Length: 360
Image: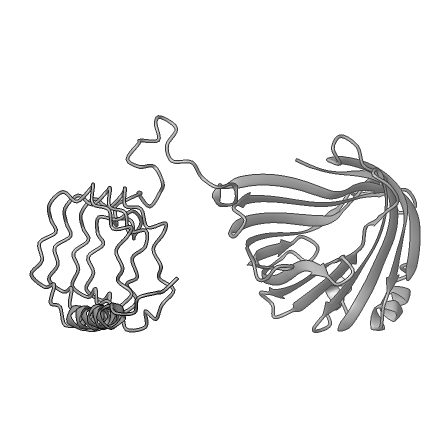
């Protein structure tokens, strides 16, 4: 079979012409100015899925294109916009139905300028300043009960009786109680401690204080106020710190400056050794020191006395009530020992104790 080759030169020439046309078309698109194109009409049915925009469009200017119309149905499935400049495009119209699922944006888009694009009609963005009221009420009134408060900011009150017990050998009642009113950050505290004799003249010795209480850190609270001591019948200015030391040791230190210039320092420590959910062993110790001698009230300079006690308590009624039994010990320190011997008083004493502690 003989094949004719007469038409081959014509076919080759046609292919060359088509190839040249393609390059010319691509070159013309790079210089196209779309600034005046009006695309504000209804383009919802336009199908761009077959558009080939893979040429060089880096110089295309879309700054004046108006795309505010309805483009909800536009399909840009195969569009390649790697070099387009969108700096002035207005895209404030309805584009909720545009299908970009097939858009090829894998090219180099580093030169795309979106600085002036208006996308105010698209979902998202920053909410308006008045989107929600600061108290989250949205304008709805709180009703007859008023605005709710956090528990930490509500003024509350409480009473704690840490010791109300009887010392059998000393034949006296010991007491220590605290009442407070305020919030978690500011409180007024009324505190009293001392003993009451149950024989002879039934004398009551107590040290009471009214103080302002405020947290200083996570584990420590500060106190400052005034106090009155019935033992020497004198008023004082008080300042102290109360909190939890390492290993959960409850610690308190209070200084009292009396009107006669006497300075008293009380130090105390207490630890709760919990045996189970109800039984607790509580050892505690206290020290008292003075800045100068006061022989009329049996006071000597330096540390005067030390008190120690160990209690076995049983907590009941949600741990609000805890009866206890224990042993107490008291001894004079320093020069106070000699002064007590001169006055024919005991230097050391110990006693069985029984009582109760509670709070509400």
